[in-house]
Image (cartoon, rainbow, N blue to C red; front, side):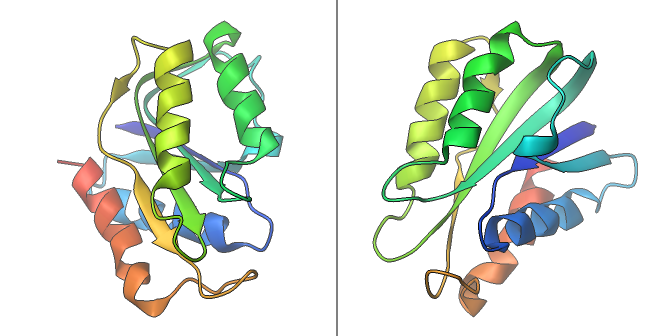
Amino acid sequence: MKVLIIYDTKYGNTKKVAELIGDGLKIVEENVIKIENVKEIDLNKDETYDLILIGSPNHMGSYTTNVKKFIKKLPNSLLKGKSFAVFDTYLGKDFEKVVKKMEKQINKVMPNLNKISPGLSIKVGGMKGPIVDEDLPKCKEFGINLTK
């Protein structure tokens, strides 16, 4: 399976989640994993992935502007995917708030893209993190479950 994991991050927590999900996906040796900051993605590069994962921190109840722009441009880009899943990092009581908003936007702009899994929401222990200890294993488990 060819997988693209895209993330945006301010303090490095969402990047860490992306990397841990990638570790889980690597449990299947044939999987090819590419992890990129959303700011570095070239939408004019003709590539097709079996799975595109998109992650964002929760910024005041929504996902980042960079991720919103990426999702909006995705249907008209050369970058293609067969399925998707999303993940977020959150503080406080905003569990799955951003995940649901990203899924809704992706379903709206790319209705033929298959959601392979419900989103993953990972709690951080403060504005700058770190990821809370009990949520760390969930990241790798999410990646492993995506291989099934």
